[in-house]
Image 1 (cartoon, one colour):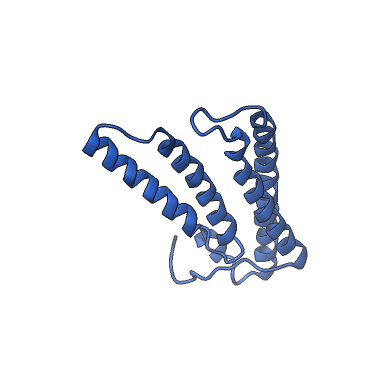
Image 2: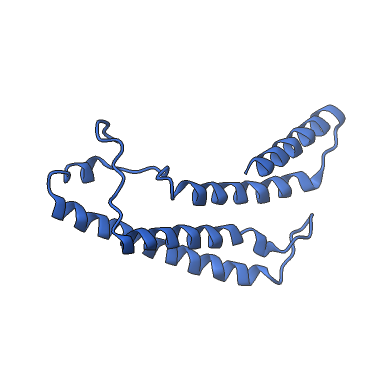
Length: 149
């Protein structure tokens, strides 16, 4: 993630300096930064899920803390919906990867399938983590008990 961010920042900075300082720019800079940004976001999302770092609206589920059965049912529902959402994202991303295999980007010439590929990989990683937590019966992390989100 750090390498993606560094290359993206350097590319955009150099392009801005060249464009405004010298009247010309690097055409590949925009395409490269877009590709790296997409990869950066999905790598970050996949890395954040196992640590419970995704945004969570725990105020309603937090009200169930005194009721273990209701909290267990809600945990199963939330994890099941997460697996379903990941499956739908993976299916759509796979279709886009297949479509992009025969196309090339305009400036850099990389396969366009590299743009939706991180969405596929991220959805597989998060879906597998959520399914594993569902099978193991891991309770929801309600680490913000005092806060209302």
